[in-house]
Image 1: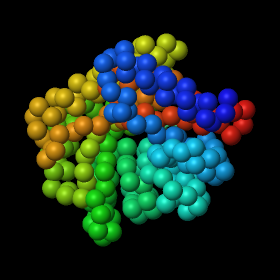
Image 2: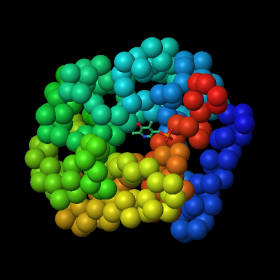
Image 3: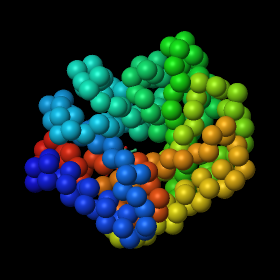
Length: 230
Ligand SMILES: *Cc1c(COP(=O)(O)O)cnc(C)c1O
């Protein structure tokens, strides 16, 4: 399949998931995850055109960002080491993996120095798998209180990763759990603005994630493929 065909198919599936759940497809944004592909492929994704690019490691993203940084909007979706904040701040407009206080404090420091705000998603480990990063759901209210004074760090959403399931239907409770957590947090009014965004859904499970309220799907394999055999 060509890139254009893949984009059309993804958009079709998002529309169907929205129709099934009474949602507006305009509320669902697609991040093209380019961590498996080279610079040339990122360039074709951007000229497709797609606006949002996701990368999970600065070491892999650096050369792509240097060449194409001004051509799109960049999302840092992987685990972020505190000593890498200086590299990504001001380059990646969205950070999807805030999961600890020390990282929030470093984001605040570097954003302040740069004179910018940084938009973040709190990563939450809904499934409870030990291998996954993220705050436990019950830790989130206190975490939000502990970062409330960090005025450069704008929490716009929650992010989660579901376990891989042969049958994506089995991921539904994870996505529903993240949506319900967002709604509870907003009920408690722990942030200056309500938390609106949900970053959830990958190649294997994005239809279900959209049905459960995802506003940002992060798609690698299904959309841009892998460098070999794609
Ligand atoms: C790699 C990655 C994705 C995309 O994975 P696919 O299954 O290829 O769509 C999405 N989110 C995160 C956090 C990732 O690391």
